[in-house]
Amino acid sequence: MSEIIKRKNSQIIGMNLTELEDLSEEFSQSRFRGKQLFNSVYKQRTDSFNNINTLPIVFRDILLEKFVLHPLLFIKKTGSDSELTQKYLFQLSTQEKIESVLMYEEKRVTLCVSTQVGCAVDCKFCATAKMGFIKNLTAGEIIDQYLIINNSIDKEITNIVFMGMGEPFLNYQQVINAAMLFNHKDGINLSSQRITISTVGIIPKINQYSEEGHKYKLAISLNSNHQKQRVQIMPISKTHSINDLIKAVWHHYKKTKRLVTFEYVLMENVNDSIADAKRLINLIGDLPCKVNVIPYNEIDGPFKRPSEEKINKFVNQINNSNFIVTVRWSKGTDINSGCGQLAVLES
Ligand code: SAH
Image 1 (cartoon, rainbow, N blue to C red):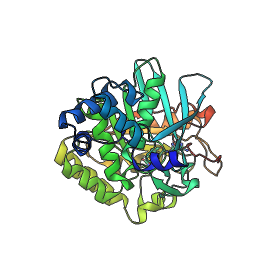
Image 2 (image 1 turned 60 degrees about the vertical axis):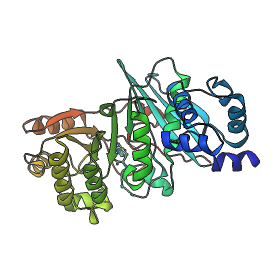
Image 3 (image 1 turned 180 degrees about the horizontal axis):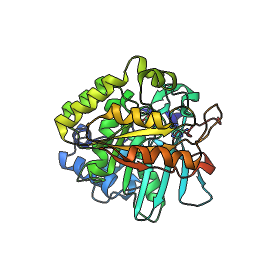
């Protein structure tokens, strides 16, 4: 129990440079020690305070006594048939569990991180929604998914997608803090173009994101081509309408000149007809963007993946448009680690 209390209040991973400099000062060390600590944690990716040789022993002892390094505890890894996708299960210091998915694709190693335990958004087709909302993750709990996994594999993770459990823009500040830590040049140093944040479309937060001028890639789970249909599968559209969403993306483009990627999960007899494709083209108009079609990954429930023929017809239809179209055939569906299949149902 004492370990849990200790873990809860004093985790080093997740602290930014200023916080580590302040912490060093608090324990009568120079601010430079904070820089060294930052470097050891995020760049050298040390696994123990004992190994940080650059710090004086007295400071290392303070860290050992008063802090823990990792906010997360690794529980288990599940490999897919192809071994190109792996699902990792972690436990928070408050006992809840989360999942992350690691995907190997040629030279790219992509980690899909969770941002919340469960999700409040209630998209009708998504497994995470079935968990309900349990809690927000801290920046440390988000970053630690990367640090623990990266330390345990032979290759280096090259890309981060905030597309695991949860809605990133309902945990905005912690997600941005985590993205900044992924990107920090004296730490993990992943380019902003290798970091993607995906949202269902929380309009005020998209606007805030555009105003703040962040450079990380933005993806939006559109999944529909008109308001009535979107309300049915994504009830959040009652508050954040599809037209307001398109306006917010226009604003983002004008402000940043960066292209958003719309994700469009293709579900049989829901949004996969030729008429749907035409409405989608009309909805987007000449908004500069990309569209990523995701054939539905089946979970318990009424939704089905369209046949390959129907998927191809839909994609061919929207290929006649101004935007760039890609198709994401999710990996790891045999271990329930495809898009929208993450749900920790075991206790
Ligand atoms: N809440 C955020 C982050 C999760 S990203 C968001 O929705 O953007 C997960 C992506 O997988 C989203 O684009 C979502 O629409 C999609 N998705 C959800 N359930 C799915 C399923 N069963 N099959 C395929 N994609 C799914």
